[in-house]
Image (cartoon, rainbow, N blue to C red; front, side, top):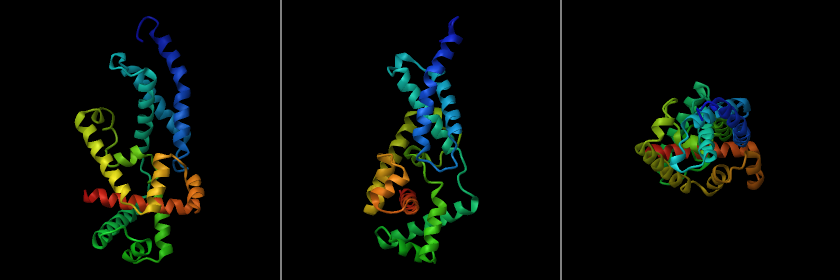
Length: 233
């Protein structure tokens, strides 16, 4: 790539794979909050493509297309993970919610009902549902970002490539899958449709027979349960 014609070759390769960046960004954007700009995802993905061009090693066995695809998506996810999604007050309320769910479900020995969580928080049911709606915008993220929450921005690329961090990621994934299995059936279905089938909220609402805003509330409640379970683990 860095021969006498290296610059030309690099430019040609960049032009060839830029459409891949846009396709990845479009596929990701439809499942994210409305405030995520397509151009931001494309910019992050382009950085990932440039990194792939500089780091690709054919002797490792993967094709460049496969390697670039992973780097592009990884760069977009790093961009998402590095954002501060929620106002401080809403984030504080989300922590209060997580603590209440954890405390209540430990006491009950089962998944708490919605009205029980509202009572634990000393809230009317509608106030509790509004809290779920407020906190949900920070949770509508791809599975990889949900899995990696808590990792500091800037620590992603090299550290995740080590055997230790790969093992930690596998353990987190196993814990998360176990947590999803323990969710109430309705929330388990929602999470499967969102994270496995990669359906957007409107599509999930049609499948479940509820409004899109109700899907948001149920998703936020499911994520709070998962946070509580992961904290216990």
